[in-house]
Structures are given as C-alpha cells and as structure tokens.
Length: 185
Image (tube, rainbow, N blue to C red; front, top):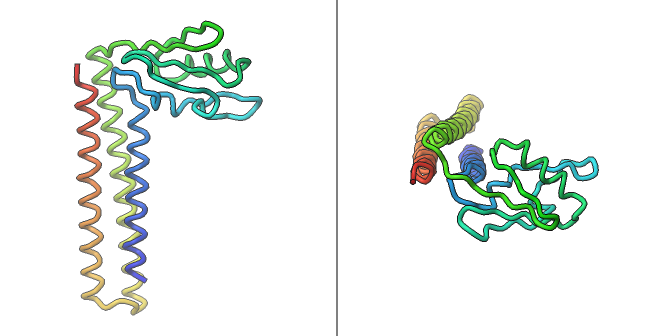
C-alpha cells in the first residue's frame, strides 16, 4: 500500500513540473515562439477554444509571429482575443494573416517577467509540498492501521522527502533557466 503512495507522489510531482514547464513556455522572453499564444482562448460560436486549434501559428522571423486562421470569419475574434490578453502585443491584420511583432523587452519588463516566473516556481513548490503532506498522511494512516512497521514507515518517509528535494531542485533549475533566458539581451 505505501509503495503505492510513493508511486502516486512521483506521478503528482511529474504533473506539477510539467504544468510549470507549460506555464513558463507561454511567458515571452523577447523572441517569437508559437507557444506564447497557448493560453489564448477565442470565442468560437459560443465556445472558448484554444487559439492553436483554430489557426496555424508560426514564427517566420525572430521577432514575428503569424496567425493564419482556418476559418477566415474568425479573424476579428482572434485579433480581439490577442489584444485583450496579457501579452501586450498589438496584432496587425491583412485579411488573410494576423502578424504579431514581438517588441524588445525593456529592463522593467524583464524584471516583471522575472517576478512572474519566480511566482510560478513558488506555486509549483507549494503543490509539491502539499503532495508530500498527502503522502506522509497515507504513511501515518498505514502505520496506525498496522499495514506498515515503524522502521518501514520511517524509511518510506525519507524516500518521500528525497523525492520532494529532487523535485524542488528541478523546479529551481527550470526557474533559473527561464530567468536567464528572459534577462538575456
């Protein structure tokens, strides 16, 4: 039973880390990347639909993204969704393609993005720590119910802590890598 708790913990940690990676991809680092638009949702006939399911998104140049909608009638809705997003990018529309020019990041913008990345990393750490608490609760319950011996419970508790320490190191390294990418001029 308790090995199952450890396996479950590892699954939860992997989910938290992959979620952090996806969230950080959508933070712009000064160069065009189609994943910048991953969080944008467009009202498609009453349904909030991810932009990447409604259009072909590409980065033909280092500072330019192009969005080519599959349904040309959605051009205005896509443009509006991009304008109202937190990206701070103004789209230009030629009737067929929406072009997004990615501006250079100012020092102030870089600092704000750094704060955002650190906040995302801290939220991931909180999630991982909550997962540790849940795993330890299962171990305590198993010990109380005599499913585990005390020495085995102690060993598993140490394994849980080791897994958490590794996850926090991984989160810190991901955050540091993204911050260095953002601060790169």
